[in-house]
Image (cartoon, rainbow, N blue to C red; front, side, top):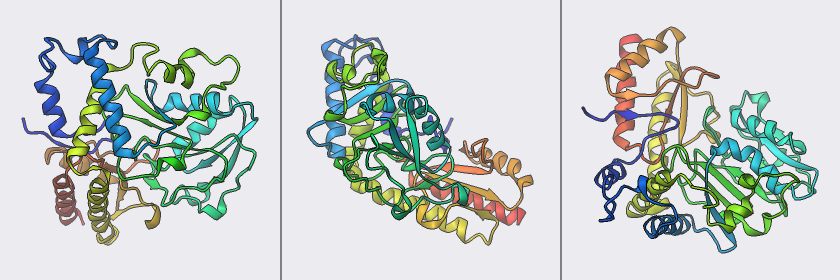
Length: 361
């Protein structure tokens, strides 16, 4: 059976070369006689896999000294709690920027541990844009400022990195990490669930400045303490070893394909091709996001009539284009076009959309 073009928001498409390598190594990793899934996480074989994955990620992102890289579990949703538990550090409040569904979830969890100042919200625009720097009502005494650079559901992406002065900046980069170069030194903490742009579900990456850890709120469980994970090399308990291994293969794939500068060029080109077609469709297809805030990774769109949604999805599936249904909270369609989505997938989607419009316009 031929592989489909998978536009799922997560778990999402993985590079075919990575899947092939994992297949080849499934029963016997490098002559070890066993699968990575069967290895002790403390054995020399897996320790080598883990160390290389971290080194490759540090190289790809240019992570400076003074930052810990943690390979954890619980998804970004666990980080909604872990961030305030670890980063309030005796302070009473934190600033949050609200740009959609995932921002709101993070805000809700943070309120369990302290006061939240919503420094800005895009609700008035129905989350069709990001607040400008000048709109941010930041508290200089906040423990940190949290934002979501890319809202997976709404397809809103920040066109800038917020300036927060001496207050640490925290970013949920689940759906945008590794899509382009970033200056990690601008952030106090970055976290990302792996299942969108890194690897399979079950792994969460946390990149945190060392001076921010070690001062948790009273009663913080050991499993939710960054310092404990950092002191134990992310192996305080058994980590998601196979997901860690696949992430490492993805990091290798990115390096072989030019790194994040090349990936940014490809991603920008893919997104432009899809947005340009949507904008040129005369209203048959519409994207609800302001142009300067459009995501490179998640492209939501609606058809001229909701009655066409099911026929569109049925025809897309028959054409080998799957997981295009929009999130249940917003409806419509959504094409998630992460790093591993080849440009031929965008071409196939645009071609199908053209044919569908001709038949139903």
